[in-house]
Length: 164
Image (cartoon, rainbow, N blue to C red; front, top):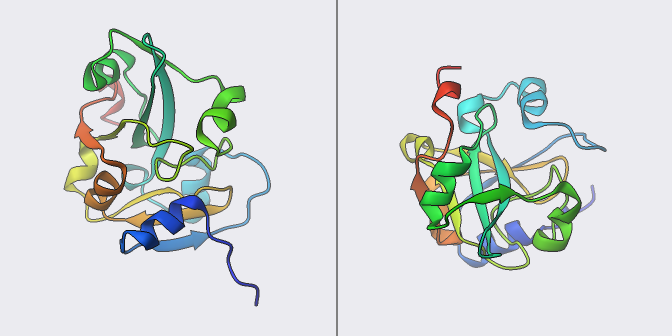
């Protein structure tokens, strides 16, 4: 059996002595988080996607929200003190984060950008985030994600999504 090669996210969690569980699954190409959660029988509310944005100031920001919800750009901008923000173009994800689409995680990017996690995570015992590459997930306590990223919880999703 071959040894699992650790991603930056795993190495940072290990270095900070943060407990996490690793889950791997077969995935050669990008599949959206909802399809993966359906395939693996995971709860949408505890499975978070990582979104990277750029503010009017040119600074980058990272947001983690449940996979079935949509980021509210106005709320997100307010949460990070920007006038407005826009989603980072897919072609720029690797250049800015060091990760690829579908394998992007708030932990271990090229730089530690300001990170905001949707407030719903605060009430959960555990959340699921990308492990830093396709086919890899990390299960960890939301407080540990906040601790390791220096992030915060905030209301950053569109309200009309929440009832789903």
